[in-house]
Length: 96
Image (tube, rainbow, N blue to C red; front, side, top):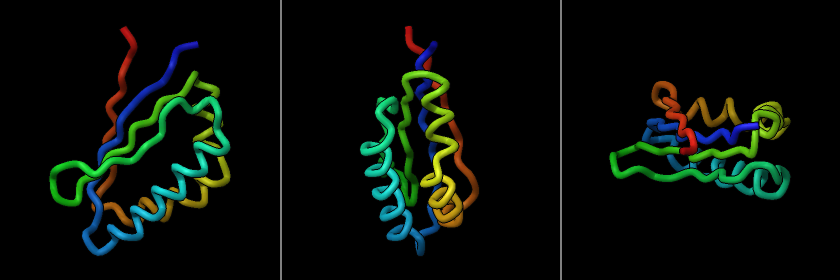
């Protein structure tokens, strides 16, 4: 199967930044400890004000599905979404 890699960019409401960052750290720690087929999962602060991104890479579609259907993501994703000003935009990368 093919590796799945993408970056999702988002804008965070300024008043929610602290909560957003804490939720991101919690999710990163969970993924590292519980999802061995997730190759990369890390949030970044972009250089534009209030802009963030998450880089995600999964060994295959099954690994992405495992992540997307996890109880932890189901718990935290709505809280992260509530911090956003708008939604996120995904950009997928394909290996050469």
